[in-house]
Amino acid sequence: RYDLETSSDWENALREIVQELALLGLWRSKFYEHAAFYGGTALRIFHGLPRYSEDLDFTLLEPSTKSESEFDLSPHLEAIRAELAGFGFNFDVERKTKQIETAIDSAFIKGNTRINLLEIGAPTGLENRFPPGQKLKIKMELDTDPPAGADTEVGTLLLPIPFQVKLFTPSCLFAGKMHALLCRNWKQRVKGRDFYDFVWYLGRGIPVHLAHLQKRMEQTGHWTREEGLTGKILRSLLRERFAQVDFDQARGDVLPFIRDADAVALWSEEFFVELIGRLTVE
Image (tube, rainbow, N blue to C red):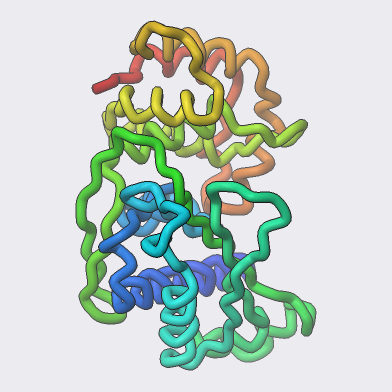
């Protein structure tokens, strides 16, 4: 189902196939009884976002506690490894050791790019474009202290077998993306993928779930006012944000993940400010 021309196309396709097999392994291990899928990869796989995405982001449905019922990620990681091995892939699935205590549990799915490209039928010689030791790496993160107010739904994939994934509704996915766009702290880097997704949501008329966005901002200290977040305030925050962005840098960040460079040709502060009027909330 992929239109593959360049070596990057093949690498992105391999990453997405591995992501989908990871989701299948998690379904087999009953992971979605406890957690929901969100973020750019959820948008890509279940809603057709026309850009590739790198990571797998999940959140518990209820906060984990420091008790006997604390959620254990380990068996679900083993389910991912077993699923990938069952389809002939050679990947390690390793939990990341925390250096400081946070609410995020992290793991990495890592495997040799050249070896695993052969499993998806890469043409002879293509694997030689990648250094022998190059690793395909997919980061998996689980928020164990989720902000309140999110709505979920069930999405169905039919390949490689029919299975279902619990994920955020589109308006709550948009709230998560708005939080990233407004609050992400990447020092001098600009994650252009946030701005690309913003345009995609607006183009489909998807509203922002305001209550969930406010809860996210409260949790990270970006909303401390007594008043509630409103559409008017959100639009004002967006104007302030767009005035700070280096859109040349933002464009450069997203280009490796899209096929049509013209999709970001108009990017500028003026372009994004004009789009603010199209934002709807619920």
